[in-house]
Image (cartoon, rainbow, N blue to C red; front, side):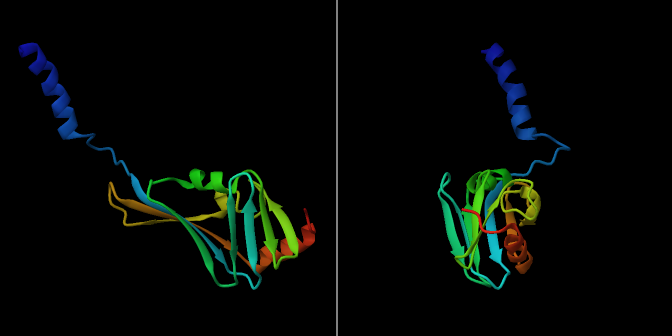
Length: 143
């Protein structure tokens, strides 16, 4: 019995004391928000991941997760190659590392809301603009 208590006491001390001096944040809710700030209808799809949505000018698409995920999980939705179609006519492919690409985490803006140690909410926002449409026109229509 003494041996059991001698092992239990240090474990309980660590459990109750925690890791002092170390800030650990857990995200309880995350959102990927895609805003259409352009004057064109935008359709985004990836047949491999099942991602498929259309947003009218001024609207937004929100994908929320209560699993506390980070940006890289959302990038699994867009995949390595995501089709973007403007006004049902101009089609381009977005890829990681592309200029202002929905497949690239650097193109998203991250905001942290409710920044409490164990209840952080993260919002990752990507905004389509008329500059994206102009860039798509220069790249030409891709199938």
